[in-house]
Length: 293
Image (cartoon, rainbow, N blue to C red; front, side):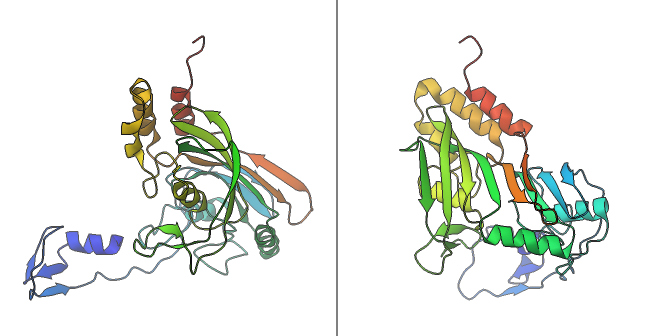
């Protein structure tokens, strides 16, 4: 999609032999020609980028990924990723079966912040991947969601697959989906929104965002599954706070704050925690009553 948009802007798409603006309406019988731009071969190269390392040893590295950073190179994001930063930080990987995803065991969405583990050896990669597959790796998130859940704690289930019409999205589907289980506990109630602790039992693409949206409590600030228009339905006395919440979010309010795993070499049980990033913490501070009120 990004490539086609860039080609449109570069005049590589012609209608009746002329470049037309985005959104131009076609008529039956008109001739459309498209000269695709050359495909750039993806390659992961070392880049000196900020990297918040929580733990590192010869077998694995645990990172606190910043929001806005893609995990690995892909079309539309050829560089500036976690992998590019890791290649600069640790050098060559012994686990580079996939040169674009060396050591990657699990991923976080671009605008989701928080903890992720990366293997530095093939043995560590296999061990950590097995933990993930067998649901022995604990992954806990904090999510700010719209509305009020009927129960203060619950389990969300529903097979997740590609949306039948909007192919960039995932959805709870009846066919050709993969089983997914998400557990949540409400931590704070702000009336029109709630802060939840969320535990993943499975690791499907966009799982928390899809399950929350499917249950009518989308993650605040989510550009793909969210509905920040709900601010219009907030009680007038709370609407200013709700508007400030939406304005301050700027991305989905989702943070992987806790990661529990077994060390692949020593067998030691390890638990890592990452505090809320500044943007998330600022949004919550604006929702909480001022001291003394």
